[in-house]
Length: 354
Image 1: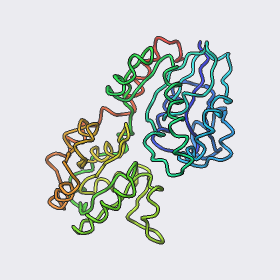
Image 2: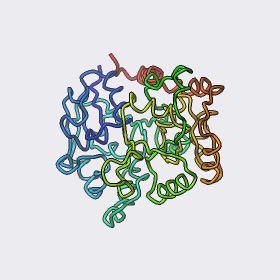
Image 3: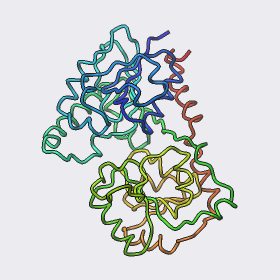
Image 4: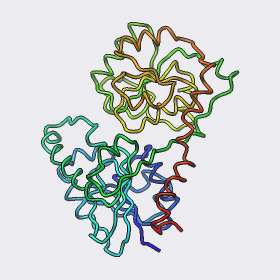
């Protein structure tokens, strides 16, 4: 039986990458964890039941985005977080950094690159801008040194073929069962008088532009997902326009009650877009974002923002009953059960699973 450890970028903030990491915890019993940063009890769940090794960056980092305040320290921290040479296989779930955690040459590494977070975030501080290009080169060099790379889509596979010995596609999952298609009688009661807006990766300028255009067209709106970077747009007190990250029990009915979700994010996995389609509501994006266009017939692409606003205004109160079931079914291939099945297939010949 191989000795396996699991590695990841962070265990300080629960997000969709945490859910993916926990799936590997379920499949690989007793594996120790190595991560760049960890805050005890920050992500209550199965990870906290394992032995966790983290770098000295844990003293400074409270949220995932805080990692990049210390970008100049990340390569050194990863090198000092050394995995024992008794380990046969390192399974790394990475958002762009943890593939650099030090291991012995004889230890094989499989990296599942679920996102490339460092390159989607715009540097805010001068220090970040100075060190970001150096960090990017380091991360890419470390990525090219893995034995096997799993990526989220065919586009990424083509990008890394020739740079890594073996590349496989493993589409991520979201908890499809937590985003049901509500009964028609219940959907009739939803107002469908506001648009939801994916806050992830949305710049202040684009967010303000959306607000201005929606308010001038008298369309209500609500930002969903992580929105700390938009804090300067929030009104004093509790600003209900910013819904933030919520559990599925709160997010599902909110998305189901919307006109549609506007999503301009550059993420490799659009969880809120998939969740919106699962509830029978459409997703609006720009033609340049081809990754979203290929998700479902429920994704509508437009040439510019003005056309998205016009479409939203024309569909105030629209129930979309004729398409709701079709859109719901279109994203069921992203279920956790199918994801686990694919992971087991990829690991079957490596003598890793019990």
